Amino acid sequence: MVNNQSNRCLTDDQMHTLKGFDRLRFKSAQESLEKAKTSVRRWWWEYLRLSKDYWLICQTSQQYRVETQDERLADIYRAWGDIYNCTFEEWWLDRGPSVFQEKEAFPEVKEIPRKPKERFQTKMLEDHLWVDIPLKLSKRTIQRQLGKILEAHHEQRLRNRLGLSTSQFKINPVQFRLHTLKVMHEVLTLHREMVEKPKLFAKGKINHMNSIAKGDLFRIGKLLRISPSNESLHGEPSEVIKRQNRMRASVSRLLNRGEMLISNCEIGIFPSFKSVPLTDQMRFSDGQIRKHKELENDWWKIDLTSELSAGKIDAAKKIHYEEAERTRDSNSIRKRERVVIIRDA
Image: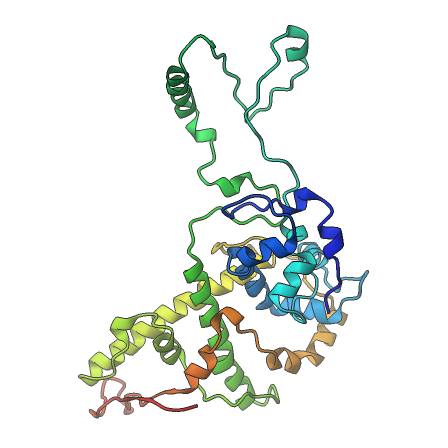
């Protein structure tokens, strides 16, 4: 349940200065919503929802008591709140701008006072450069000479404008594509529904199971077109097996990178594919862990697929394939036709 904090968010223009969009300032959360709901900030929200530890905190915490020993994750909860009982649109209108607000005004080029006393009071910042511009020169000459000076200090200049952000949750200024974030999220959620959940259900570790056929990495890869060149199941059995393995390897790499995104979300960084260093401090106390065991089945009941990926689970139900039959000799495969059948769910 989200708290209506929209009025609090709308009182300060600085809260509606959002770096990374094609404009900086927004008059209201409603105005920035359209751009936010398909942006990297949306995917940050979606990946944080995939964190089981964050979900457990949301289930067990009270308003003034965050149930974790990890202060970084506690800070995230205080800012983001419960993101499971609302849509992204509801969450953004409630607190999205306040989460991503810029804490400082962006630097700007300005004229330094000419009088010695006034100039003495001007603080020279380490990442600023003072220049002396003779106003008698032409505009073109001044621009050319300024360009040369800036080139001489190129190592101090930011290559990505997101690096200017002073938000508590600033977008990591790395090269990424929204489509890649979307595909990796789909791989993670399909793997959860089609591989992890059926395995746990079969072992009796959970008592809830959606009506979906058991799948594997190949089926996920085929559905999402991860590696089109390895989709075919026709041909020599040995080649079919190789294509299946290559597809599974491609999907597995995406799974690993997706898990890294989730781990970095838990320390307030996104998007990042770097491994998060392990710490000696436990994230939860023994008492908290005991409570978590009672919630295990509930974790697997919830649907974490994104609204931006609607229909993927239903589409997965329609794909069925017959895999090559192996004998006890792993190199010996019975030759028979491999088929892919598209059927109604």
